[in-house]
Image 1 (tube, one colour):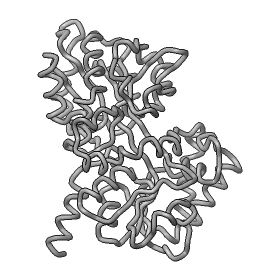
Image 2 (cartoon, helix red, strand yellow; image 1 turned 45 degrees about the vertical axis):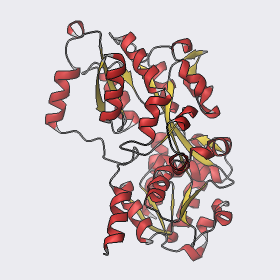
Image 3 (cartoon, one colour; image 1 turned 90 degrees about the vertical axis):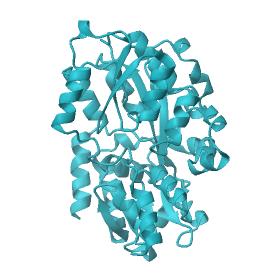
Length: 374
C-alpha cells in the first residue's frame, strides 16, 4: 500500500462513528472509576456536579472543559453503546445520572416510563437558534410538554464516487439494484436502518409499522440487492476503507453523513446524495433524569450543549459531525460548514424522515436474519 493511500485510510478510519457497533464497550477498571465518580450516594453529592450518560463525543475534553470553565460545574460523562443501553442503565439506577442522551425518537419511551422530567422551553433560549427542522421538534414534545433538546444530527442515503455513479443517477435509490454494481456496495449490519429505509424506498408511509406481507416485501427487496453487496460489515471503519480503496464504489446507509465528512476531509471525490425516495435522519436529544438531585446543574448543561459555542466544538472537534444550532456558522469556516453538509439541512430535512424503531422488534429481527441468510 502506498503512503498516500495509507494516509487516506488512516484519515477515514481514525474517528469512531456514533453508530459504530461495539464502540461503547467499557473496561472493568473504567466502570470502577465511574462508580466512584458517578455512583456516590445521592445525598453526599455536590450540587455543582452533573453526571451524564451519553453517546461517544460528549466526553470530548474540549467540550467538557468548555462547560466547566463557563459554569464552574464539574461534569462526568459515561458513554453508552445504544439507545437501549441508555434506557436499561437509567431504569436500573445502579449509577445516578442527571442527564441522558438518547436519539430523539426515543424521548417518548423514556418519558412514558417516568424516567425523564418535563422541561420549560424558556430555560433553553438557544432552541430559537436551531435549524428549522429542529427548532420546533415534534418528537421532543409529549402531551404538550417539552422533554428533550436536540444537539447533533445525521442522515443516511447513498455515498458514492462521482466517477462511478453520478449525483443525477444516485437521485433514484433504485439505481443501487442495477446489475452493473455487482459486488460494489458496502453496508453494515444495522437491521433497524436497512429494513426501515428499504420500506421507505418502497413507498411505505410508516415503515416502522411494517409487519406480515409488508415486511416480507421489504425483505425480498433487500434480498434482491445482495448480488451487489461487497460486504455486510460489522463496523463503519471497514465501510470507509472500502470507499477509500474503491473496492466499494458506494455505500448505502452506514452513517452516510459521517462517511461523507471523512471522505471529503481526505480529499476524495465522493458525494452524499439523498435520493428522491427520501433519506433516513437521526437526531440526538438531551433529557434530564426524573430523580436527578442536580436539576439546576443539569439545566445549565443542556443550555450550554445547545449553544452555538458548544456545538461548534462538536462539529469540528475530535469527531466531525453535523449539529442542530444554525449559529455554528459564526464559528466555522465556509469550507468546514460545507464539509459537514450543514448547507444542505433545509433541503435534506424537507426530503427525509426520522428513522424510527420498529413496532414489531422480534419480527424485524427474524426478517433481518432471513435477509442475511439468503
